[in-house]
Each structure stands twice: as structure tokens, then as C-alpha cells.
Length: 468
Image 1 (cartoon, rainbow, N blue to C red):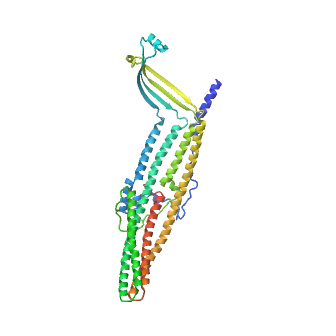
Image 2 (image 1 turned 135 degrees about the horizontal axis):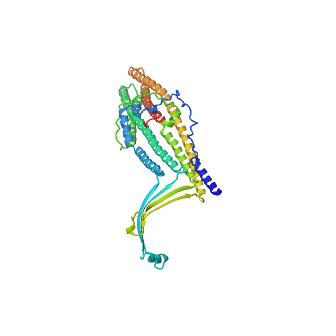
């Protein structure tokens, strides 16, 4: 009696400790800084809460982004992954429900006349065969003492949420890439206009020098150098047109369409009036989909450790079967005489498989450690991206101001050089140099405009904007 009591006590002790068979690893967020490098303050206001249509007011850009979000193949794949994860979650939710089966069968057995069954059949039934008619419903249920079902459901839910975050991450990337590609097209449009205007400007200089060469006032070298400057500007035209079509093809792929002309504004838009508030790094845990995805991966890893740990413990399975059974078809549904029922319970403890179970458990622990490292890396990467985007915006503002002043000076220098040249107070080299400087400074300014817009789009993505 005492031995039976001890066995019962051991079993109860194991059951009571079931909820603690696996200790979860919490989200490692202690290393998150309080502010970003290059941030002006620690305000919690962030552009991540601004919708992408508010952040990108250009109507044609909005149409392009809408098309990309509807047709992009990466987005379509992400949606299918969500649907797959949803099906897995439905299945996991049903794990606690007993498995129910229904069986209807009939059989006829003719035993050997020389066998015991054959002799008894002939003796008691007066026939040479045995008939059996059976209809039953079976039920099987495994008690979730060790949290297998709970961990399965938790893992499936986290994987479903992960797939949602993956879709959001793809969306933020697409929004940013489409905006940057669109801004690049606007830059190429502006640079093409600059190249054509500069070619026309140098053409007038060439005509003047050709007249002066005919009059013997300048040598052929002067005319040749002016023509070379004109051809430099002219060469940019096909180069920029080529880059423009390549960029349109890239945007077409992002929008899930065949290469085609991209409708766009006639000039580059100014930076939005929205202030570039970045909030604090801790907000990345809620705003950045890729960080959320990495955090949910840790929950999945915790559930897999719990499942692997539960394999060490015995499983209790309860089965029940009930229905009607008869060896004569005429009595098959003779109630209650044909009714039968069976209830059974089994407790299975793995013995010789402990090494393989331990291997799976240790691998699950290592995989969880890898997931925690990946999460830390995602935090580090996201904070770095925001800090880099901030410094790019800050320094591009300084570069843009300098480049704007340089363009104004170059325009004045070009006008003055032409006037002085026409009045014989400057030589042709000064005119050519002034025109060359103007061409380069205007091209650089157009590039910096786009760089600022692209940096703003990248900052918006890096703080987690674009999915709302």
C-alpha cells in the first residue's frame, strides 16, 4: 500500500511541475540606447506614425506606390505566407479537441473445418462461416499535462504574427524603393534639361568663335575647344536618356508590370513640411516590422524548446469506442442488445529514445540562442540605420546650401564671361570654363536634391514608417 502511495505522489509531483518544464528566454532589450546618434532630442514623436500618403504628397508617386502594393510579386508571396500561417494556426487551435472517428464495417470469415474455430462455429452456430457487423464511433484524447498543445498553439500564433510582420517589412521596403526610384527619375529629367540648355548655351559660343576665326581674330584651337565643350553637354543627353529608361524598367518591376513609361511630375518636389522626428530607439520594437518579426521568432523558439522538453515526460492518452455490434445482420441495430463500449487509458514513457530526445532538445536550445542573437543584431542594425539616415540628412542639407550658392555664382560667372568676351575683355577659355563649371554645378545640385529626398524616404523606412 505504501509503495502504491509513493508512486502516486511521484506522478502528482510531475504533473504539478508541468507548467515549468521549460523556462522562456525573455526579449534581450537591455542594450537599446536612450537616443539616436545625431538626434536633436529625445522626444517620443516619430514620423513612423505618419501614413505614407501623408509623407509622400506627390499624387503621381502615390499612384505608383498604390500600384506596387497591389501588384508587386513579393507582396503577393507575403500574403500567401500569411494565409498558410493562418491555416497552421487553425490546426494548432484544434489540438485540444479529441480526435473523433466513425467506422462502419461488415465481414464474413470462413475458418478451416479442421481448425478449432471451424469446429466451434459449426457446433454452436450451425454454419460454416462467421459474420460480423460493426458500427462505432471512436474518440482519442491526449492530456496536455506538459504543455505540448499550449506550446504548439503559441508557436503557431507567433508564426502567423511573424508572417504579418514580414508583409509589413516588405511593404515599407517597397514604399521606400518606389519613392527613391521616382525621385531618381525626376533628377534625370532635370539633369537632361540642364544638359540640353548647356549644349544650346555653348552652341552660341561656338557660332561666335567661328565668326571670329573667319575674321582671323582667334585660331582654330579656340573653336575646337568650344565645340568639345558643346559635345560634352550633348553626350550627356543619350547617357541620361539611357539611365532614365533603365530606372523606368526597375520601377515597372517593382509595380509588377512590364517595362513602360512612368508618369511623373515636371519638377522635383521640395522636402515635406513634416518634421523628421525619429522618436527614441525603444520605439523600434513596436514600429519596425523586421524587429517585431525577430522578436516573434524568439517566441517561436521558446515554444519549440517547450515541445522538445515535453518529449522527456510520459504521455497520457485516453481512448473510448462505442457503437453497435452483432454477428447477424438482422440483429445489428437491435438496441440495447447490440450496444457495446470500451474506455481505455494508456501512459507511455520513452525509454530507449532518450538520447534522440535529448539531441532534439539541445538543438532547440541552441536554435533559441541563435534567435536571441539575431534579435539583438536586428536592434543594432535598426538603430544604426536611423543614425546613418539622420547624419545623411544633416550633411546633405549643408552640401545642398553650398551647391545652391555655387550654382548662383556659376550663373553670374557665365553671364559675365559672355559679356566680357563679346566686348573683347575676356578670352574664349574663360567663357568655356565658366560654361563647364555651370554645367557641373547644376548637375551636382540636381543630384543633391534627389539625395535629400531619398535620404528622407530612407529615414522614414528606418524608423518603421510605410506600413500603416
